[in-house]
Length: 163
Image (cartoon, rainbow, N blue to C red):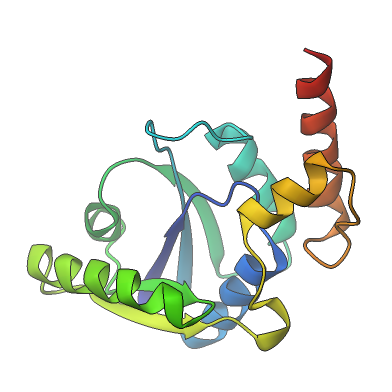
């Protein structure tokens, strides 16, 4: 069984993330989406909320599991007996950073490979940051994520504005 992990912050998940998850699920026996707790960032959603949102968004993909993690992606891969780390690439600008990370991960864990999946062209512009920016200013999010994610984003932003 070939197990892949797809680590990220997913704050929030977008159609681009879901596209990579769906495509990875066809290529690997099991895909474990690792939702990173990064203490250096102040996310819109807690790790638990992001895990719940992704579980709902991927409920129809039977070989996908969502798990929280912190620390190094290679350690998360090893803990889950994964042979592969999946990374999504939107544009050439992503490649230099992602290549450096893949090479570093290879030094740390020679038994774990990195596979790059290019995002489908229709989502190449999309990022969680862009989605949050548009949401904060009341823009249309329907091209960015499914309805359940959009509702969660709007609700969270409305609560923050009221605070």
